[in-house]
Image (cartoon, rainbow, N blue to C red; front, side, top):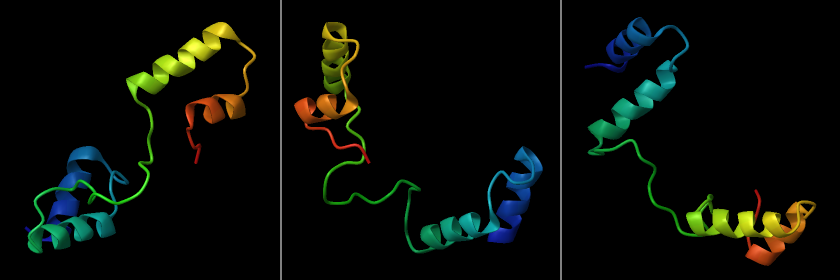
Length: 83
């Protein structure tokens, strides 16, 4: 299938504005190049998300002890970076 046909079928099924043609064209190019997934490639460095159950529990414990705790204090104590 061509990018144009795929884009047409997606907009017919889900409505205008659901996805841009350039995104569909990019996907088609990726798959024609041998890619098998739309997931992002793994990258080195700190993960963008630190939302783990351990962090959620730690934040909840801090809030249970002090409802007026600052975000800066929480991020410092838990060594979390907010982007």
